[in-house]
Length: 204
Image (tube, rainbow, N blue to C red; front, side, top):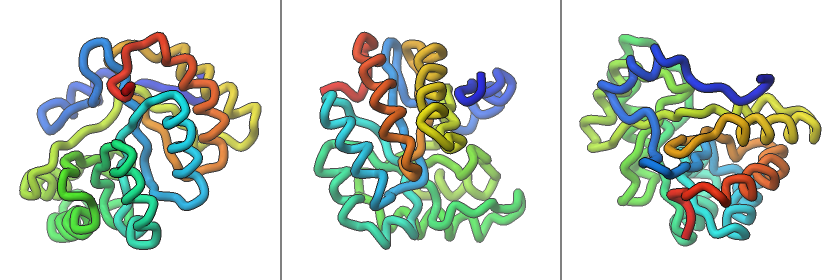
């Protein structure tokens, strides 16, 4: 596989005591999008989801929300869930408890009141980030299938990435995408029709 991967079972086992590895229930596939909102590409994702009657969960970066509040509000209006992805997405040291709380709290202030999920940047859950999420009443969640879509550099890459996702996906998966690059539209054009046969949590 050039793009899509699954976390090693050891990593999944290590994460389980501290949060959910994925959002999907039995027989469901959940679509998640990290690092937005992005003025150029988040609307593209919304258009694709709307066309097939699907919903997703968007893990938002606080400083990007502050620059694109209209898109963040649109997510909620269209029935998508939002989650906390810290304020700046910076890599925090393992012992940086105060900085972690500041990152999570500042982002949470900008999200809809019903936002209850937290995903650490790069999937790297430090003690400080875990404590911050707990203190703010957020549930930590990662993913079971990483599209690695951010690696795409061409339409051919996008087609290969999408095909790999469909080859690996199974009921119960939570797929990680990013709504911050121009190839997410072409990827979803292939992936979403391929998921129609699977009972997705996102379907209306």
